[in-house]
Image (tube, rainbow, N blue to C red; front, side):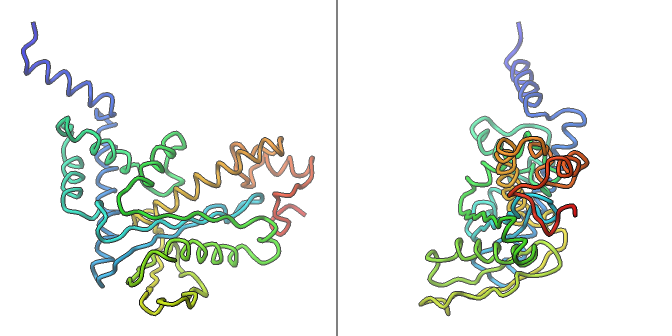
Length: 284
């Protein structure tokens, strides 16, 4: 008969197996948790450097596609968010440096941490895990988010970059408007440039809101909020293109989501273009 200690050990081993904490999986889990530490620390340090009240990360998906909209997302956290708290940081640090699971009474928190540890550049997050990740992101205490689409027609009428800036501005206003009477807001924008033509809309009280923008090259691998925005935008756009694949079969959008793969370009030549194709991008 097994002793209590032996039963406890077997139970822990089983839980580790279920959570993928063994061998190479354990190493990957530790790497993910260490990355999560770094992503959160980046945003926390940026906020604390100049006493910001709110940080908003921005990213886009679909810039180079031949069909479908461009999608941008914004993800915001205030300084009081649980992610920036010492208790949460201690739990992440513990998990990052130990293969042993936490006590059972904090298993729900442990699971949240391990799910958030999947956060990375959206191109590096497995599709099978993105929904779980995005659900956890939406449930983070103190978080705000907005997603916006700009159509293929609008891209053709203006330009892809104009649509990206317009979309990001709209996300900014959705997050901010009506929620803060006074705030110092930090905007972290993925890439080498900040959002163009961004200003407050002149509503009463806007003078109490101040904004500073910081471009972050490869921001989706450095900032928690930018990486969160990246994954939310990709989830939303991929879902949209999969829906359009049913309406316009034969282009392979259920897998290529509008990018110029061989399958897609061949179908464009054979079937022609439809309303989702960007004429300014598509084959002549």
